[in-house]
Each structure stands twice: as structure tokens, then as C-alpha cells.
Amino acid sequence: MRRLLVLGAGTAGTMVVNKLRRRLARAEWQITVVEPSDTHYYQPGYLFLPFGAYGPEQVVKPTAPLITDGVDLVRGEVDRVAAAENRVLLADGRSLPYDYLVIATGVTPRPDQTPGMLDGGQWRRSIFDFYTYDGALALAKALDAFEGGRLVVHITDMPIKCPVAPLEFVFLADAYFRSRGMRDRVELVYATPLPGAFTKPIAAARLGSMLDDRKITVEPDFLVERIEDTTLVSYDEREIPFDLLVTVPLNMGADYVARSGLGNELNLVPVDRHTMLAKAYDNIFALGDANDVPTSKAGSVAHFAVDVFADNFVEYTAGKPMTGSFDGHANCFVESGDGKALLIDFNYDTEPLPGSYPVPAVGPFRLLDEAAVNHWGKLAFRWMYWNLLLPGRPIPLPAHMSMAGKHLPRSEE
Figure 1: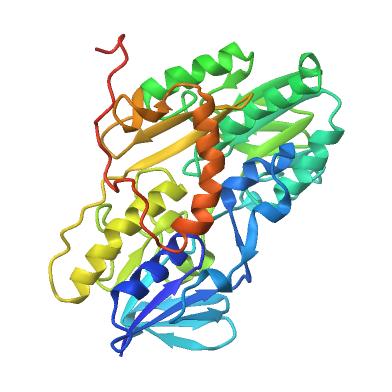
Figure 2: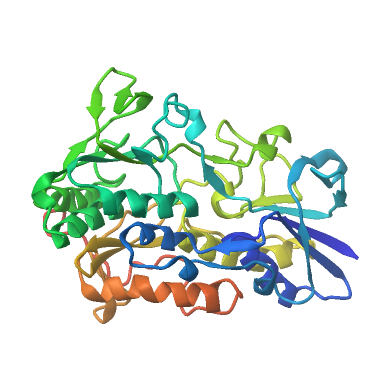
């Protein structure tokens, strides 16, 4: 029996085992996934929890039923990967051998990495995050009790999971406070290490104008060095005081990646960006948020990358060249408040452009344009996630980005 071992039963790990179980002969392949949690979280739903748009029960399901029959689910924490020995050591002393390894343990917020964030006495008092389930629920209570003042939405550093989520949060906060009749009592500030609202010029201009229209102050190029009580302090000594801070802490890969000598300074696994094969070992892959590919850490990227990876893996383990090449394709709905959203679609080489998706001229989704249909598309994605994406069922969206239906803005043509 050949052994495929997958670390992590989050979005990417669950898709991988469910897809490959159907592709690899059961008489020839043992597939095992290691996961410490008995709960699977729908992380895109965290954005809606603070505003009461989702209930907690809508973003959690038990892990085990999501894993297809014929895959061994091992409960446990990974201590380290002994790559030279082709085995994974668990924290409880168990040892799991493998022929091929997939690292899919994602990234987690690390507030402990910024002085004063976790240890300054303000965590979950005036400093909150929404990138964790507990954090999003705690923030819901803080927003409900907020009577006015300066609310700062802040990104510690890039890369982060779902890089548009902080923008979405500030747009939803604007709509939330307007709905409560208290927007005039709230100063909204968006502090980012980027030079603008987004990394690519056309989307940055569009999103930046939306921030301006909503009277949301942008503090660009802000790299936080520490937090002193209720003040963000940057490395160049700029200060941003706050009454309520909604922060995105530094995102890092799992600590076992560092202990195993497999990661960079953020514990992300360096891989070939087209095949996800680790640069250091020819039988280790890293998928989803766990790798260092230069595109968004988002569910759509995991989905498109896993589609390419599954075909490649079958070829690779049969001794053939991998013919698939992941192009960095990502698409993300960007909630903008008041029942509307934008959609952005891009890859390694092409920035988000206006147009329609997925069918040219028809859509139904509008690229870089606020529309109710985009909002409903984002809400519908939750059903698709549980019922199509995780089970590894086909979704009629191409893994590679298409230029069909896209065009340069008139000012760029």
C-alpha cells in the first residue's frame, strides 16, 4: 500500500482527501488526514458574526462527517515532520509514515507577535479580532455596546487570510452604524501596511474611492511596531489612538513547520507556485494557506489549486510529468454594505478588472462593481462550501482565470 498523509482537515485538506479518494485505487492507496479539532469552521462566515448577520450555528459543523469513507481521520497535534525519514511525529508520541505528504494546516492569527496587542491588558476589552470564531463572537458584543468614538480597523502585516476581509469589515461597520442611527458619532479609520486600499492599482483606486465616499479615513503604509494602551504606534513613530480596535494580527503558519525546518520566517512552506511541490522535498506538497504562493490566501485559491493539484498528483505518482499549472487564480466577493458587494477575479499576472463573471456580458456577477447580485452570490457560497466544495464535487467554474468578459477601465485603455 502506498501512503498519502495529509496534515490538516480545513478547507484545502478536506478537499484533497475527498477528491483523491475517488481518484486513487483503494487496494493500492491508504489515505490519512491528521486533524486536532472535532469542529470544522466556515471561516468566511466570521465576517458576518460581529454584525449578527450569521448565527454561530451557521459556521460550524463536526469534522468527521465531512471526510469521505475510506479516509482515515487521525485526531492529534503534529509535533514535527521528520522529512528525511518520511514520517510525521505527533505530540502524543505516535509516528505516522508516509510516501507522500500534503501540508494543509493553514495560517492562524498571532497577536502574541505584536508587543502590547495580547499582553497589554486590552485584548478583548478594547482590542478585538474577527479572524477567529471566539474573536468574532466577542466582537459582536463589543459592537453592540459601542456608543461612539474612534473605531480603527487595522492590518498588522501581509500576507493574511482573505486580504479583502478588513475592507469588508469597515464597509459593513459603516452600514451597521448608519442602521443604528449613530454613524455621525463614529470615526472610522482604516490602517494598512499597504500604500492604498488594495495591492493592485485598478482595484485600489475603486476601493479607495468607496472608502472616501463613506468618509472612512485611510492610514496607508502603517507598519505597527507596538500597541501602547489604546494607541497603535508604527515603526516610524506615527500614532493612531483608538476607542475600539479591530485588528488583523500577524498571520503565521503552524509552529511544527518551523520545528521541522520546512518553512520561511512566517512558517509558510516554499513551493513551486504552479504545482505546489515543496522546493526542499520531492514528496511533500503544501496547499491552501500553508504555502508561500504570491496570491490571496482564500478559499477560492484553495479550490482552484486543489483542482489542478489532484490531476497533477495522479500523474506524478504514476511516474509521469505534472502537466497542470496553477495560475494563481483567485476570486473574492467584497461586501460593501447595504446588501451589495463587488467581485474581483485575478491571478498571478492579471490584476482585478471590470467586467462580468463567469459568462461574458451575461454574468450574472459584476466585476469591480457594487451590486446586490454579488451580495447574494457571497451568501450562496456558504451552501456551495458545505455541499459542493468540501465534498470535492465538481463546480462549474474553471480553475484557470479567463480574460473573457473583462476589460480595462476607460481611463486605462
